[in-house]
Image (cartoon, rainbow, N blue to C red):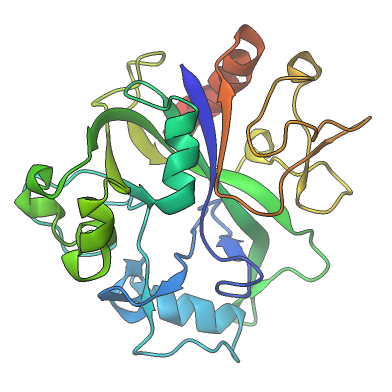
Length: 273
């Protein structure tokens, strides 16, 4: 099994603010702005649109009611209307897809989705980032690959809403074999009591960022030291791993030490259910 740390959601260039760790522990990843069909105003969480939540946290955001987003990976069933047969999905294209293919990513491998997060609180009735809390890279979701759609003909009707199924934007990529959509297994093979894809609530075991360091400097268990991670094979420093500044997909083999780290995460998931 290969483990893929997949960077997603708002960053300093796309979105320009952290996704929130909500007061109840929900890790609400904000999808990046795009020219796709889904607006921030149409995606809902706990009765509020994503746009409303973004504005609470950053009143001067450049986003508005017409701003569209790239809802991918799409992991939460309740955020928008779903067609019958829906399941979570994740698309990839271009150089990032090449990174996955070069590293042999295939059915049975595990995506761990992470992004830039900050803790939030309700203050005087309004959600805000907690002052002076750190910027963190946090793992918020996962998908074990059960199937890979690699041609237009394989796209089912219920998936036609997905940004990577949009032929206006991705027709040429499909024709050149430079687009793919990943679908999950029914259950995790290494934890069969859990679904093959989903999200986490916040726990310190999900934080990649080493305490007291900038968010791109990660801390792994000592047993993982020296494990090869694609994109930055020279990333291991004396007391942290320096993640690459550019790139979405960071692939490592599921060695014994890596799988122990992964299983600890899903032990947390079990406790959160």
